[in-house]
Length: 73
Ligand SMILES: [Zn+2]
Image (cartoon, rainbow, N blue to C red):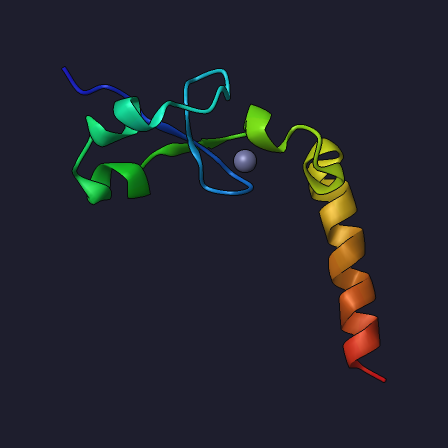
């Protein structure tokens, strides 16, 4: 039975299905990096207080646009 893996989509921290960061001992149980690469991305609790993560897509788009404007000067 394949156990599904989850990771924070913001920082890449391995998490549970609910976005709770996993303990290092739990992370070490999965040694196959390919499995982590295939992990489902979730909003991790580790980044919940991060303003980018809170509003996620919308705010991130704004930031990207502003960055592009700055680069275009
Ligand atoms: Zn995170």
